[in-house]
Length: 166
Image (cartoon, rainbow, N blue to C red; front, top):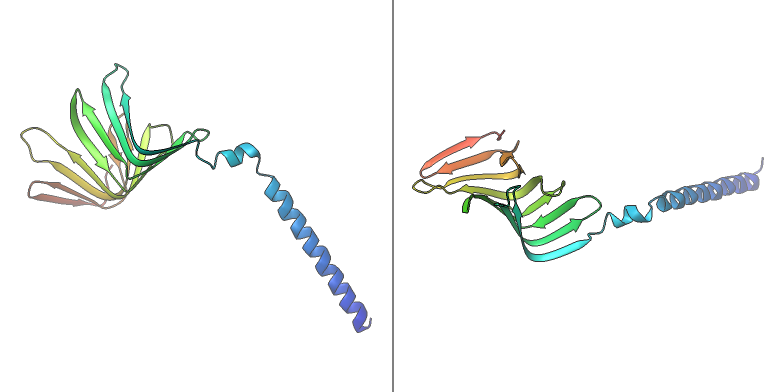
């Protein structure tokens, strides 16, 4: 085979390969259905928001404040910027949690907070208990917090460092 035939054969193979790859990528890109694309875009965007949540007896349970909240209805998920969770015991504020970012992947059953997380519990007649970590998951129903991150717990002059919180 002379050089021209090799050239045209290689060129033909290159063109066929390019067409096949572009065809595959085009089909793959169309595979995302419209409702899948809708799940990527928030249904509700709120700025400077506050939402009060009540327990089964109609009593205040917790409040969520945030600079910004993005709610994705199809995924049952809300993302928060600078969230503050405030939990109540009766009518009194029991404890609160703040962070730079937060997400609730299950319509508020759990909150995952990240970035400078601070949890404070205020009890009358006692020093404030403060917990600091970089990431934590809070169950809003059980009011339980868990993390694998290092934790600093402070109360008055007492300091305790822990490898996590379970």
